[in-house]
Length: 433
Image 1 (cartoon, one colour):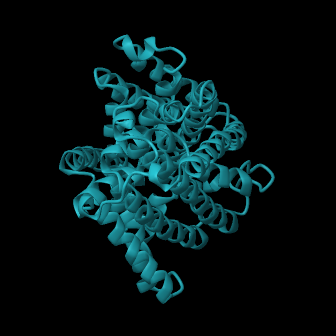
Image 2 (cartoon, helix red, strand yellow; image 1 turned 30 degrees about the horizontal axis):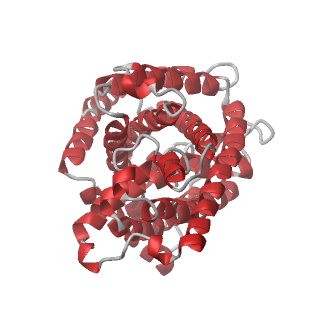
Image 3 (spheres, helix red, strand yellow; image 1 turned 135 degrees about the vertical axis):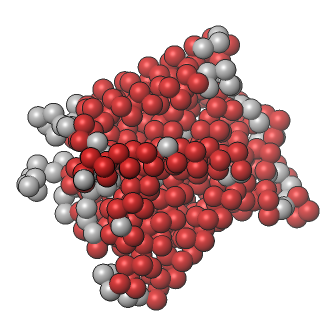
């Protein structure tokens, strides 16, 4: 058994993992995707933050009751058995490596501010994206402690431009008054637009569960993981609400829509001058930090599943420092294939599609983990609580609602990827027999 001293992830690194994985590419890229929705997107943010806090509470309670590595798989298996647990693990793994493709695209999008040829040369953006993915893979193959320290540093660095953008937004409001805000027109609000925007905003807050995945590498996981999960989610939600809504409402839709670097365009539009280059650099660092954190998850999850016997044992092989290098390499190979398959799309379009696909895949895990709380309380394996039951029910409804908002095309591809895991499960069961 791993000793407490050898466990590399403490409260600050776990909180940085949650915040860093949430505040990555989403805050810097989503204003372009949300531009057509206007005030509908602001309402979507409020609903998403509320839903994410419910999910964070669900994961915090599950982590306290079952501090096992594997996160969503472990909790679903505890409540519903191995087959549902496998499907949740499979869909969640898909969401992680698809997320990494979107995050890497976001990093390269902001680098295009310095090198415009990236956006103009066919295929160059895809090649650079792949290079960024493998750089993050190499860092994580060096070990969880190295990845944890990089996550902590990049999380601190990425807050600097967000504070600066929030300051610029408040200064614009102070100088020009409320008239500069996009007009609020109740007739433009619609349930369909709010639902569609909410599927995108949830992408930004994916990660409430990330501290639960490497539980075997966390010091005192039963206390550390719940605290990091709740505090990290609340902090990230507040940042998103202030910064993203400010950029969205203080910049014309025509400026943001289709932008490869919406924060830079916001600063340019309001006369930020050379600050735009500094902002682009920090935005790229932010996305790279998130990619580092999610790369840790994409390697640890299949390794944990292999140790549980539901993924091939090949994924579970580790190096002398306990790093599942094979798992990292296999996951990054899938990211590479996905990026190259979408090389012909603009960076903004490719980002939006992959963000929605990752969200849809994650929602299987969120829905089942919310239902797992209700099931485990019914079985008497978690302390009965009306408050927790109500929160879990709200989290389940929220997950199902957001699934609908992702759209039928994205949902179809999510189901196809989920179905692809059935033969793997069948083969593993057959091998076990």
